[in-house]
Each structure stands twice: as structure tokens, then as C-alpha cells.
Image (cartoon, rainbow, N blue to C red):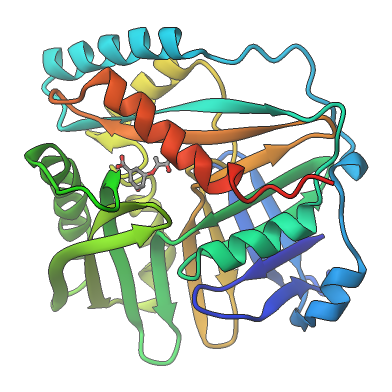
Length: 323
Ligand SMILES: C=C(O[C@@H]1C=C(C(=O)O)C=C[C@H]1O)C(=O)O
């Protein structure tokens, strides 16, 4: 079962699971885990959606003996990551953690949480799924790719750097977003002769904001999957150089990111869209794990990085509906 809502829309969609056609696909960060939702994409009315509410106690899996990384451990790890970034001259390395929400004595209304997220983040792609014993919710606005089947126009964005909405950018964020922009521009130039790159501007997400640069380019339909596989994971969620950072992530994090920082592909008659799966949580019968991370550079401060992950966790946390 899957529900989703596109950015800037009020409509809720589901897949009818009838056809062999794959319309929505969740791809994990390491691309090894794939979850397909087949069939036509159909609209669900709000009445229908609200009449069939899903609660956390129907999720089959239980989270047992999870040891949450506390602030002291995280600060120590980030100090090591900063040194590692300096030693290896990395422009950035994205490290994440999992924040635990324990609701053993309570339950969460997942449908209402979906609606709360939709209202809080108008620019986000919002989803809720329960399938094969797994349940995830997410709401974020980063686009890995949008391909228009009629015009062959491809759009993507460089999104990185995080500060509270009322603060001013520093060099640290500017230098953190630049490698993402350079990385994308460098890939697109191999697939298109004309690339349109926007100015860099503010991208709000609730009470925080990011730096964003947009790209538009005409690409061949046959190259689309190749472009996506080259783009993913961008330095916004992994780091640069890509392979080196991928390995460093598995060393430092020591857990599977699963669908966090992976992407969601949605194909319709007109478009093929790929949304980056961030500000997301994995739900169990008794608890949720909120996946949150940030780009670490030589100029990072461990305290600020911790605060950044707390702010990002708030995106889901503040919208949980306890019942
Ligand atoms: C890694 C996350 O977000 C990404 C990393 C950002 C950063 O490091 O500043 C900002 C936006 C996202 O591209 C996350 O939300 O967990």
C-alpha cells in the first residue's frame, strides 16, 4: 500500500497494484534494495483516504534492542569525520544518524501524519507506504531528476547547506553546496550540449533553508537511466569523491541507510520523476527511526552538525500524530 502527494498539489495518489507496469519504485541509498509499486496511479479522495486510516500498531515489524547514538557519541564521531575530511582533502562527506522515537505505550496515526506533513511542506514530495513488513514515511523537496517525455527536457537541482531560516549564509554552506553544483554540471555536460544553470537561491523547508541551483538540459530518452545512475548519490547525500565517500560512510555509520538518501522514481504518461528520499522515517509497531544527516567539511563544528540533525529530525517529529 502506497500513498503519495506531489509537490505543490492537494491530490493524494495511490497505485492499484493491478498491472505489471512499474509506476513507483523506491531505490535504496546503496541501490541494492528495490521496492516496486505496480499498476495505474489513481487519485484517492480525502474522504476515502481519511476513511481508511492506518495506525502504527498494524505495522508487522517490531524494533528490539535498538541502541541510539547519543549526542556525546555523535559529537565524537563528527570530530573524527572532520579530521578525516582534512586528512583526505575531501570537499565534503555526508554522515547521518538515526533518531529513535519510542511509542511502545502509544500508537501513531500514520495517515494523519501524512496529512500533517503535506500541510507543513507544500513544496515536498510526501509518501507513506506499508509493504513487505516495512513502513516508511517521508516528505522532502529535493529532485534528483524530472524528465519530460514529450520535450526530452531534464531538470535537476543542487541542494545543500543548511541553516535556520532566519540566519545568514556563511562560507561553510556556500563551500558545501558548490561541490554538488560542480558534480552535476560535470555529468550533464556529457549528455547535453545546452545546459541551463540558474543562480543559486534560498530553498526553504519548514524552519530551515538550503542553497539551491537548478539545471535544465535536453537529454536523450535512452540516456535517462544512465544519467540518474551517474547522478545518484550526489554529494548532497554522499560526498565527493563519490566512491571514496561511499566507503567512508559505511565505515563511520556502521548501519544500512536502507531507503534513506535513496530515491523514489515515479513514472506517468508525461513524466519520469526521481525524488531524493530525505526527511524520512522507518516505522515499526513500537517505534520509529528518523534518518538525518548533514554534509561535513573541514570547517564543520560538531555542535552545529548535531543541531542540524536535530532540526532535520524535527521535520517528521513535529508532524507525528499520536493517538
Ligand atoms: C542529508 C540530508 O540532507 C541533505 C544535506 C544537506 C546539508 O548537508 O546541508 C541539505 C539538504 C540535503 O541535500 C538529510 O536531510 O538527512
